[in-house]
Image (cartoon, rainbow, N blue to C red; front, top):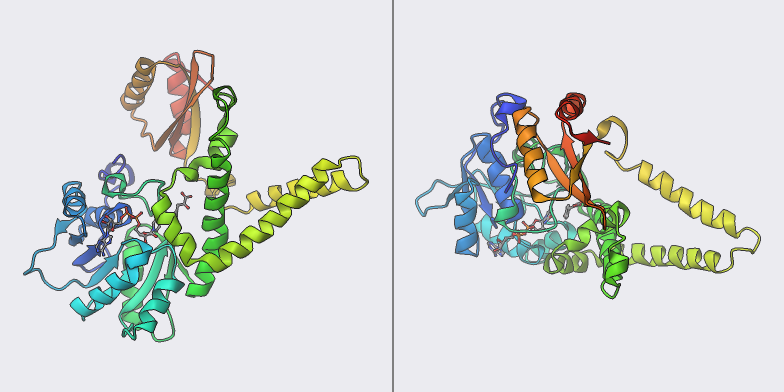
Length: 373
Ligand SMILES: NC(=O)C1=CN([C@@H]2O[C@H](COP(=O)(O)OP(=O)(O)OC[C@H]3O[C@@H](n4cnc5c(N)ncnc54)[C@H](O)[C@@H]3O)[C@@H](O)[C@H]2O)C=CC1
Ligand SMILES: O=C(O)C(=O)Cc1ccc(O)cc1
């Protein structure tokens, strides 16, 4: 649960929270416990609930809030962070149990739970669906982080009937957690995440699945390219079967279009001497360049952190020494990734730091005898 401690030392004292608690979180896994941790850091009173008593106790132990007691006051806001297939149930129950609270959910799909609630005839005046575009491959309270939502888009799906006050409550939670508000209809949301989240998940999983029968020798050659394109293949199949099933229309359309591109590409490669074929391949690859350049944070100043690469002997002792020395130098490590060179006794520690400390970090490390790239 790295990185969920207080960050006041780094960024200075936190301004007062906008959110007026108590906030009640239903589903205290990755998303629910991260919401709790982030709001607790801002001093908001958070109560927790989960189907699993162990999960809720764990989330409370980590500091995400306290287990809700029977005589607790009614919450101002309820955040439903359960799996998508029970989100409508949990929202309906929360609206009935806490008639004065504003209820939001963080499910990765927005239309299916809303349609289910409408089909049941639930009064949705106090409900505002939302979705923070931030997550991790593995779920569970143990993976939660207070800063999970920092600088990430947080989609809010209001409709014409949503009271301004209800909307403001949900926006306050998102803003207190560092999210960037984006308003969309549920349809716009589901089409958008189909493209930027659900299609990549399927492609990454299918690509990684190709590695299962590969020889050890072939796998041993893997580098950053394969790692970058398969990171999310480690995601939880149980969550994704729900997400993809609930958003199947946009996702199947996107998959059909991609399958066409793949067939096109393979055709061109099969007959490289045919006139126009090289142009066709170049066009598809160039379109990839144009697409990747559009991803926020992939280029220029929108990067959150700067990565410095330090060469280390590929032994645990070396890495521990590097981490100790970073601490001694007062350099806060935001993220760490290790690259191994197969067959060579050398590794690369890729350390993400705040851009403003990167230059000093490199200089100090070099002075202490480390080699950097
Ligand atoms: N994992 C991710 O990267 C992201 C997930 N989401 C959405 O957040 C929601 C939660 O996902 P995670 O936190 O990753 O899952 P998780 O598995 O870590 O946590 C879900 C928790 O809900 C509990 N739960 C299940 N049914 C319940 C019920 N009826 N009442 C109370 N608790 C119940 C489970 O015991 C579990 O602890 C999902 O709807 C998902 O689509 C949104 C953004 C990112
Ligand atoms: O890891 C990533 O890049 C993600 O995009 C994680 C993610 C997974 C599911 C969501 O509903 C939102 C975000």
